[in-house]
Image (cartoon, rainbow, N blue to C red; front, side):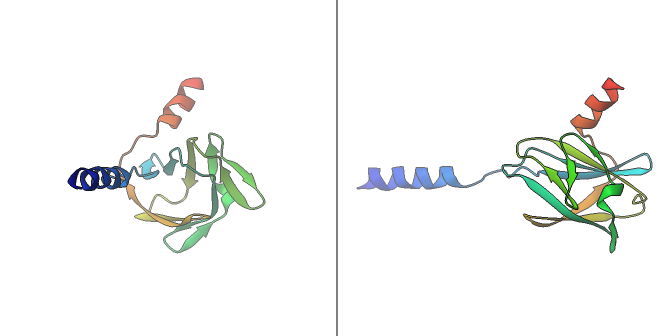
Length: 124
Protein backbone atom coordinates (compact mmCIF):
# COMPACT_ATOMS: atom_id res chain seq x y z
CA UNK A 1 0.00 0.00 0.00
CA UNK A 2 2.74 2.46 0.94
CA UNK A 3 4.71 1.61 -2.20
CA UNK A 4 1.72 2.58 -4.33
CA UNK A 5 1.30 5.89 -2.47
CA UNK A 6 4.99 6.70 -2.84
CA UNK A 7 4.85 5.96 -6.59
CA UNK A 8 1.71 8.07 -6.95
CA UNK A 9 3.29 10.95 -5.03
CA UNK A 10 6.48 10.74 -7.12
CA UNK A 11 4.40 10.84 -10.30
CA UNK A 12 2.39 13.86 -9.13
CA UNK A 13 5.52 15.76 -8.11
CA UNK A 14 7.04 15.15 -11.55
CA UNK A 15 4.06 16.93 -13.10
CA UNK A 16 4.65 20.17 -11.17
CA UNK A 17 6.47 22.90 -13.07
CA UNK A 18 9.49 23.57 -10.86
CA UNK A 19 11.11 26.40 -12.73
CA UNK A 20 8.86 28.08 -15.24
CA UNK A 21 10.96 29.77 -17.89
CA UNK A 22 9.97 33.30 -18.79
CA UNK A 23 9.21 33.39 -22.51
CA UNK A 24 9.50 37.20 -22.73
CA UNK A 25 12.21 39.72 -21.90
CA UNK A 26 12.20 43.49 -22.41
CA UNK A 27 15.24 45.76 -22.19
CA UNK A 28 16.70 48.99 -23.54
CA UNK A 29 19.33 49.02 -26.23
CA UNK A 30 20.37 52.38 -27.59
CA UNK A 31 17.20 54.37 -28.29
CA UNK A 32 15.07 51.23 -28.66
CA UNK A 33 13.10 48.94 -26.40
CA UNK A 34 13.75 45.32 -27.35
CA UNK A 35 11.18 42.63 -26.61
CA UNK A 36 12.72 39.19 -27.02
CA UNK A 37 10.28 36.29 -27.32
CA UNK A 38 11.62 32.79 -26.73
CA UNK A 39 10.34 29.44 -28.04
CA UNK A 40 6.73 29.18 -26.96
CA UNK A 41 4.80 25.92 -27.11
CA UNK A 42 2.02 27.51 -29.22
CA UNK A 43 1.83 30.14 -31.95
CA UNK A 44 1.69 33.67 -30.57
CA UNK A 45 -0.39 36.48 -32.04
CA UNK A 46 0.50 39.93 -30.74
CA UNK A 47 -2.68 41.98 -31.04
CA UNK A 48 -1.46 45.22 -29.44
CA UNK A 49 1.57 46.75 -27.71
CA UNK A 50 0.79 49.15 -24.86
CA UNK A 51 3.61 51.43 -23.76
CA UNK A 52 2.57 53.52 -20.75
CA UNK A 53 -1.04 53.73 -21.93
CA UNK A 54 -0.11 54.54 -25.53
CA UNK A 55 -0.76 51.85 -28.12
CA UNK A 56 1.93 51.58 -30.77
CA UNK A 57 1.01 50.79 -34.35
CA UNK A 58 2.16 47.21 -34.91
CA UNK A 59 3.55 48.06 -38.33
CA UNK A 60 5.93 50.54 -36.65
CA UNK A 61 7.61 47.76 -34.65
CA UNK A 62 10.65 46.36 -36.40
CA UNK A 63 10.52 42.57 -36.41
CA UNK A 64 13.55 40.30 -36.21
CA UNK A 65 13.23 36.57 -36.81
CA UNK A 66 10.19 34.70 -38.09
CA UNK A 67 7.68 37.30 -36.84
CA UNK A 68 5.41 38.60 -39.59
CA UNK A 69 2.66 41.18 -39.74
CA UNK A 70 -0.55 39.63 -41.00
CA UNK A 71 -4.13 40.91 -40.73
CA UNK A 72 -3.17 43.59 -38.21
CA UNK A 73 -1.37 41.17 -35.87
CA UNK A 74 2.21 40.07 -35.43
CA UNK A 75 2.37 36.29 -35.79
CA UNK A 76 5.22 34.35 -34.19
CA UNK A 77 5.34 30.60 -34.89
CA UNK A 78 5.71 28.18 -32.00
CA UNK A 79 9.15 26.96 -30.92
CA UNK A 80 10.92 29.89 -32.56
CA UNK A 81 12.59 33.03 -31.29
CA UNK A 82 11.72 36.55 -32.39
CA UNK A 83 12.36 40.11 -31.31
CA UNK A 84 10.31 43.28 -31.58
CA UNK A 85 12.20 46.59 -31.67
CA UNK A 86 10.14 49.54 -30.48
CA UNK A 87 11.16 53.10 -31.34
CA UNK A 88 9.95 55.99 -29.20
CA UNK A 89 9.33 53.84 -26.13
CA UNK A 90 12.63 54.34 -24.31
CA UNK A 91 10.96 56.52 -21.64
CA UNK A 92 8.67 53.72 -20.44
CA UNK A 93 9.19 51.50 -17.40
CA UNK A 94 6.98 48.69 -18.63
CA UNK A 95 5.30 47.43 -21.75
CA UNK A 96 2.18 45.29 -22.10
CA UNK A 97 1.78 42.73 -24.84
CA UNK A 98 -1.84 41.93 -25.62
CA UNK A 99 -1.81 38.49 -27.24
CA UNK A 100 -4.04 35.55 -28.06
CA UNK A 101 -2.64 34.02 -24.83
CA UNK A 102 -3.56 36.95 -22.57
CA UNK A 103 -1.93 40.20 -21.52
CA UNK A 104 1.71 40.06 -20.44
CA UNK A 105 3.23 42.96 -18.50
CA UNK A 106 7.00 43.23 -18.92
CA UNK A 107 9.26 45.42 -16.82
CA UNK A 108 11.80 47.05 -19.10
CA UNK A 109 15.29 46.27 -17.82
CA UNK A 110 18.26 48.59 -18.32
CA UNK A 111 20.31 45.80 -19.86
CA UNK A 112 19.52 42.52 -21.49
CA UNK A 113 20.62 40.08 -24.12
CA UNK A 114 18.68 38.59 -26.98
CA UNK A 115 20.72 35.92 -28.82
CA UNK A 116 18.69 36.51 -31.97
CA UNK A 117 19.91 40.12 -32.16
CA UNK A 118 23.53 39.03 -31.72
CA UNK A 119 23.18 36.67 -34.69
CA UNK A 120 21.51 39.37 -36.81
CA UNK A 121 24.36 41.82 -36.09
CA UNK A 122 26.93 39.20 -37.19
CA UNK A 123 25.15 38.82 -40.53
CA UNK A 124 25.26 42.57 -41.29
